[in-house]
Length: 155
Image 1 (cartoon, rainbow, N blue to C red):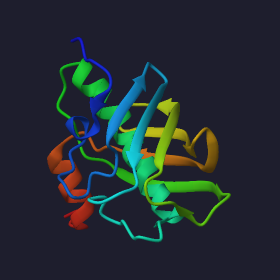
Image 2 (cartoon, rainbow, N blue to C red):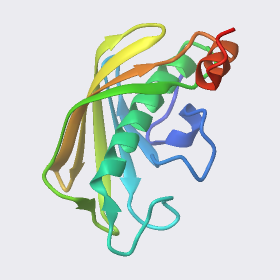
Image 3 (cartoon, rainbow, N blue to C red):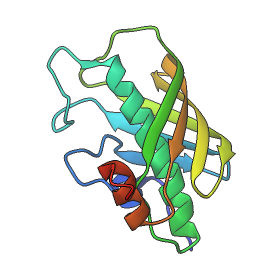
């Protein structure tokens, strides 16, 4: 399958607006993805003073989801929902992403399995890194497994 860049990130996520926090996929290969988010309305957490940098953890998680969804699409597999399991070593040099800024999120896969992934993530604005973390994510093998897991009904 031949996918063209830049591409709308929503096409590779199981999310629905308004909870899609990534706008565009700019680059993707076997290990990395680079995506962008414009901090402006209708961004769900937009505030005229900026978006709290802690929201960057969800932006990073969604970028990891776009990475997985891209590779699912290339392999002609369905795009599956996932869960953020852990955020390690989240560090930020600012408390917010400023209105109008273009946040560029880079993710690098350290471990990528069928159900588990570990990624190094960085959010930058104008080539200045503002936040970075290591994320661990899980994608259950089926929609049924996902629903069972999030419902807590393990029977």
